[in-house]
Length: 355
Image (cartoon, rainbow, N blue to C red; front, side, top):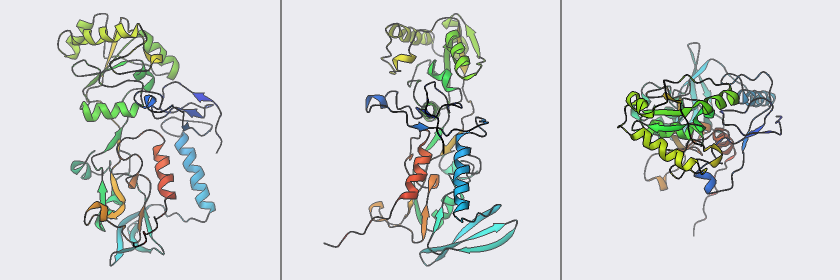
């Protein structure tokens, strides 16, 4: 697959055409940049006719993988749903499948691999665990559980932030009390997680005309604010925090920003500057948060007995987001590919020799 040797440095969900490299996981932001020297590890395949959110890097990657599988002789059965696994004793030996109402059975020669995503689109499972990606109905996870597989991190999930990253980086992300709670220049999904799991979606974005114009130039994203005012006290009346709370938050931020600093949330200096009136506020309370789950079977080990003594379910494997892998709780762009590659290359560890 071709990659353009150009680095995209603007905050965005995906680099535009002509750029093949970007920071995709907040590696260059606090707290991660304080731990290790950041490197742009996000590789974006080159393609024509890119349509963000519809036909982009993931699409072209899957086309290459699908074509390679077909060339290798892999047979794909479309419009086919797996109903349940078939076992012989403790061993998984096949699966029952349904195609346009016709039921049949597939026999596994060596084993069966579950690889069907999470469970965000299952009506019942989020009530028991969490609330996705369309089609992720949890069927593979439930089939694994049915034959004894243990599960892990079923309460975990990743959520996208409901505003453009170019605006988020240039704004102040506030809770219902008018306080900041995370640095705005990290991976947008991390801000989304904090907003959903820690703030129950009761959040606001505060910005100014400069941030709005820079966002428009960087991404073409036009922000329609919920409220606009030169007076922070007037915005407090609209937003609902305690009197003086918003004024104090902006005053503290601006005083440090004059020095290029952010001692409260440690936003990178390149994104730190004082906000000036008129101010705009985007009310994101109860906004729609796209989410996918990251909990699933633990490499299909049996749930019987303590975890340290559990053994693999014979004949059953799993890959991708159906397994509890690299993004077990936190997630950043690219780790789905790392997870699928990792689980596809894992080898069964050698048995220890008896002492």
